[in-house]
Length: 334
Image (cartoon, rainbow, N blue to C red; front, top):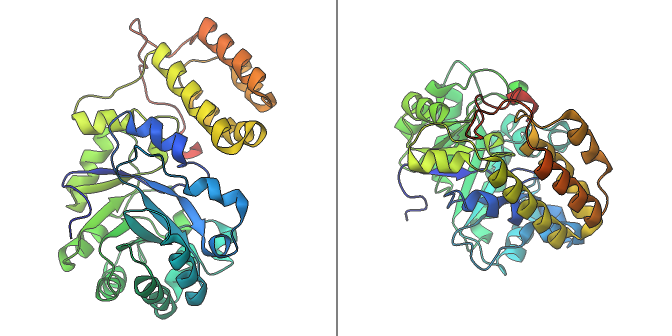
């Protein structure tokens, strides 16, 4: 079974971000393969209403994966059977999230400390899901590929059909170099496709990750936050692309309006504040405008905000064509 086309950039499942409005912005820039935010198995089984919006799939989404988080095999199986009633293209199991509250539950990357239990979770998911099962992990050692290779082999034997590897150990979170040699070692040992993940913020990063890891499949995560145009850059193979002021405003307005429709006005805007700031960061928009984002509570507030942004425009960081002359500052903050 072929899950991803060759030479593909995949939008990662990002907690708090990759809902339908986020994916729509990325798809308009050329993204085909995308995931829901990670979904907790317990919230699926007990039907937490707050998470139902995260599972929404638009009628025109041609491909969508769902990512499941959990550490209890029985609960994971129940969640998989519950999700079988929806339409997804793959079921991805998260073993890469390094957030402390997830690690305390021995979920996400916390499962990597107990490979036997991690495999029990995967076995349970493979047995219960009608969708192909894929998995996202982190490397187990930043220098020695052997532990990651050994674990990856076991995942392949358990029935995982694609393996995505974030090339940093848990303690490094999202900082520091990506251990591409470890990803490459895994790729050479497995029969299933391996997707390289970590540090892609532009076409140069993507080319370097592909070259060093040997993987033609890569995953884009934080590099897409506030910058759906990264997929235009990656799919066209052109130089670094930055939106004009008008395009940025139109995309931002559509994105946030979609969030208000999905979640409701109040919750939608609260969730959107970090999205708005990501779009504006490092692109020359005034601090006064950015500071006002924290005060957005109503649709009318957002309308006033957008009228101000559109009329004022960027004050610096853009050239005469309206294009950004450098990348947004402080990647680590995204």
